[in-house]
Image (cartoon, rainbow, N blue to C red; front, side, top):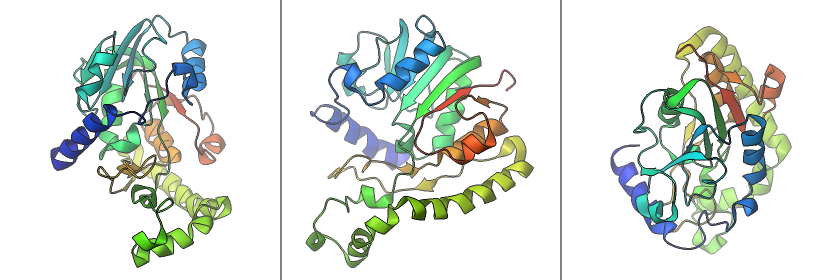
Length: 264
């Protein structure tokens, strides 16, 4: 994240973290991702391992493990931490290579303009065989950034009115599947010939750092979990949550659990 986007995003998150509501869920147990993340930590015995959270927000999960470090773009949340916290750009983590045993990131990756750079940094700071838990908001849409679902028709442009009127069709699962599946097939076939140099496909969005209409209005990119699975596999990583091509091909909103390769 660089330049004007970084400046706007840093100002936005500094402002919004100081206000109630955004990423404020009270007790960790009330967070929608708590059960899945806690299960991941227990299943792989990470309670006493060295762990990093990228995009930690207010630090709801800092006590799930003993050795925890959190990073976030905004330093305004620092007073809420009693464990190590660093304010930094996720695409430039200030840690040595192979520093952590495990890393998790929840609803963060969709907010950065270059998610591939962030993923590369995550792999860099993980030790060989380290574990990565990723739970972005998948498939974010530009009309969410514009607040179209909740705004009145009179506030919208003609283009936005057309989008709002057709949202039931756009959001229908059969329509989404019909659009997504051919793209996944093409990208899977292409990945067979690219190898380790395969780039990560994603769609850029225009985040709203002003009004913030609704959840994910501040999303900068739209990500497909299938593309991330192919990206990790092309680098020799094991995607434990989706071990087969069938599981990968029909992935939807579930988190990814990855064991990074020992050969990098």
